[in-house]
Length: 233
Image 1 (spheres, rainbow, N blue to C red):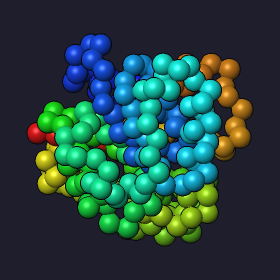
Image 2: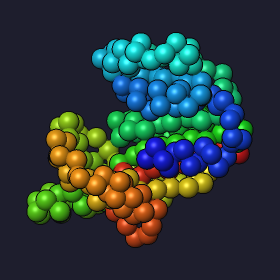
Image 3: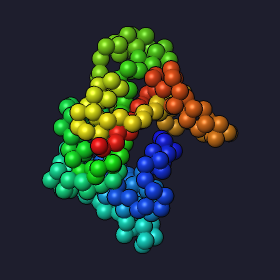
């Protein structure tokens, strides 16, 4: 997914421009630090204290120049309006967050508000149109049948969360003034791999296959996750 994000940034902003980025629900800060190393000014927003502590520890291990480019804020993703004025960011990331929000429309509207004109909104969500794929491929037919027609699922942490559908999010993005510009599938072939799976001997071919499938119909439509990119008008 990082390649997809870099492709969208490179296609929409001048080469070498230092962008203002907001990473909402940044977790341990992996994406925020990667983008700061690329020269961008990054603000990371996270409400989980343990995740925030891990991000701070990772940031402390970086060179001073990179540390100066990162600001960490402890806050809820739904409260961006309380922390940042309109038009504060060129790029806003919201990866792996919407599944924990019962009604994402207000959160997305808040993110659009803090985006500058022409800004990029990057979303990573669970694909509600493919919830039967994981249990079906695992041979859990009862769970696969239950997954049809629902937006609720149990994630690998054992939490009951929700999924989003491409058509609904496309309409939402249009409604908040950041219409869909591109979308990809993520984890088309690898969703059923266990967390402790041994890496393949040829990981580049695996990545190439995932990248190709994530851009190609009908494969991307059954991906476990969807990566959507909207552009603020």
